Amino acid sequence: MADDPFVRTRLQETFAVKDIISLHYFEFSKDFAFEGEKHDFWEFVYVDKGEIEVFADTEGYCLHQGDVIFHKPNEFHGVWANRRIAPNVIIISFVCHSKEMAFFENKIFTLNNPQREMLAQLMKNGFAAFHPPFDDPRNHTLTRRGDAPIGSEHLIKLYLELFLIRLRETNDLTKREQRLSAPTKQRSEAELVNRMRDYMEQNLYGEIRLEQVYKTFNLSKSHALTIFKAQTGEGIMKYYRKLKIEQAKKMIREQRHNFTEIAALLHYSSVHTFSRHFKSFAGMSPSEYARTVIARM
Image 1 (cartoon, rainbow, N blue to C red):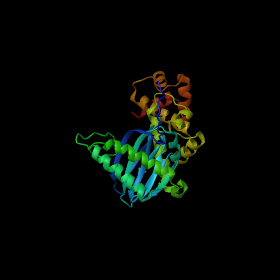
Image 2: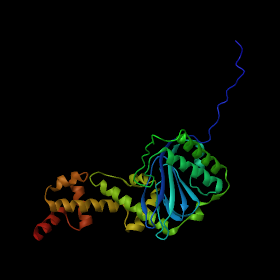
Image 3: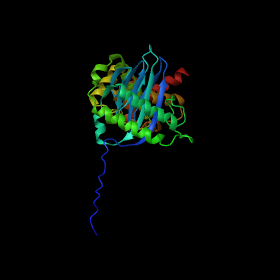
């Protein structure tokens, strides 16, 4: 049997977008604020009109009309209006494991006319393929239209991949440093510290270590300690231990548990360790505190 003269050449894919997670077009008020999130897929934010403030991990940026910023997987990020201008914003998140996606890490672009047109076509096909709402920041579920034009979802994929390719080719990069914003950075650090405090409060009946805290929020140890101290005036673990003692005080006042039970519930290794920590923070032992509570009653 003769060899097949037709050699099949598998086409290479620079970017292979397999799933789209969300597709949003927002008309934010001038006071809009989103406290932030992180997830294991890519997201980009494009300013269609106006200006917005964006934070990514520990940095804050001011983006102008035509700017787009990429958030890599597991990067904590959020967006705010600047309290002066009501912006229009496109936010798209998607799954792409292509190694070329590394190019978009820590990047801000200013789109040219052809790139803006690609994004417009992507959104046009998104609106044709899926039901609204597209402006609910809490609703990311895409529901297919029964009457969607043939190929509309495929065109979303093609326009998104073409958009990434054209951006990958461009030399028109805006360095993130050019969009750095000190007020946004301070605001983002305050939000981050609030989340760290919430995390500690949610784990009062367990035991967390310093490493767990800074790794949970994708921070280095030194940076986590610095921003927490700047916002609260205290170290992370000292603050956590103080929260435990405040909870212990509440439990003593409620008189539902003895000291041994309270120590166990708050995950102390022994009632003696609990008593020692209690006295270091409250200035008196648990029994002395209990007597003062009873005296006041």
